[in-house]
Length: 293
Image 1 (cartoon, rainbow, N blue to C red):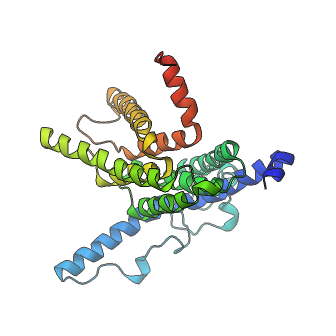
Image 2 (image 1 turned 135 degrees about the vertical axis):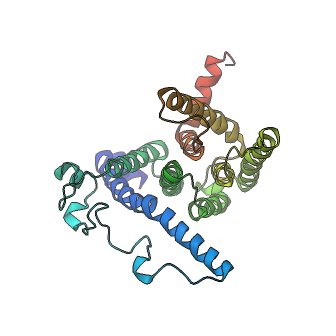
Image 3 (image 1 turned 90 degrees about the horizontal axis):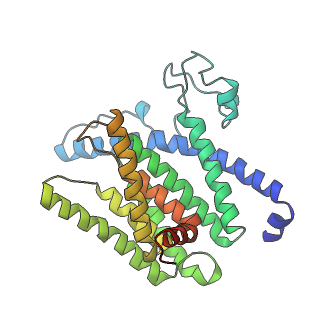
């Protein structure tokens, strides 16, 4: 595989980009439907606890595979030729083929972002066994970040499997299946969770308000499991700076009201992914700027 990448880089990177586009199309489904599935489960659980009849009918049941994708405005099922990543959006000029209603730019943006993440991961790690896992890590972070940005939910259905996968692949560290060994992964997962847990409770004690959700604890635990405890300070620093800059800009422009919460998960995801692909470069640049190297 490494020889194929070295001898035919254009073919390999084209295949990776196409794979990324296809996965991005699926991620759009996850981003849209997973929160709806979570809400349906919560309503069903609440009805069961209260002894009330279920309110979700089989016709309104939503999963990642059913029903078929439809236009959010007119409800017309989307034909296969209108569901080709990016190309269909350009061909239809960003409008539904049936009713002409504008299609959210999120769809091609997520598809392109998925492809770019895949290209960056393969360029960084080559054909190592870890590369496949790094792709899963990247794509899951993308879906989690977008769901948190849209809904301020970080689904356990994404975070917990990714956490366990990071811990499990650490067993193959010596064979190139992970970046860190099991001890480093376990300490990273525990440390990531406990750091934000402590921040949460100190902030709550001082202000009487909740500054973040438990999903953020789990997401930083995921990053610690994959990248090790040594990466946590860098991830937290970058995430905090990005969140402060963007939040301050949104408040200054009036796009974010004072006192209105802004999700922290997207910044953790971005910082975690950047540390994955360029952690050494970023830390080296920081040390040089600080005059420490």
